[in-house]
Image (cartoon, rainbow, N blue to C red; front, side):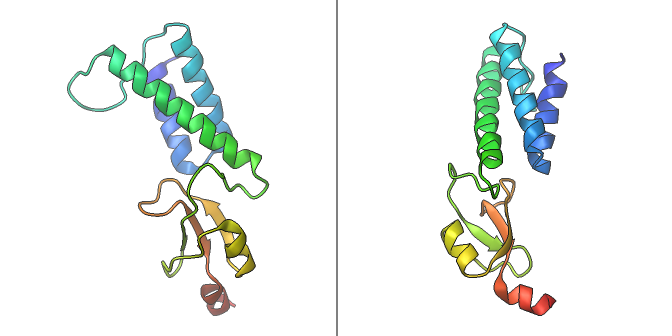
Length: 133
């Protein structure tokens, strides 16, 4: 296994929201590190040393594994291990503070979006849905 390629692939899978791939790659990295394999370079900065990259890789892989698993275990793909902050993907208005309330208020297409700047979930608000109809 090439840990550098696996690292970059895990980051790309996270960005795409390909949670099964995130799990596979995070597990591969953790197994590699457990067998004392050399770590990937995690940041494009002056050399920080192998121990730095090992710790960062392990922490990131465990984080990614937990989040991807939580997304896949929830019937609606809503991990409960993160704060629920919702924004409309069309008009950028803020949504209710819970998934249950958002569904009750008519929000649709709610998806976990961990790569956004200020919210964890994107959906379509009732107002934008009415305009689309």
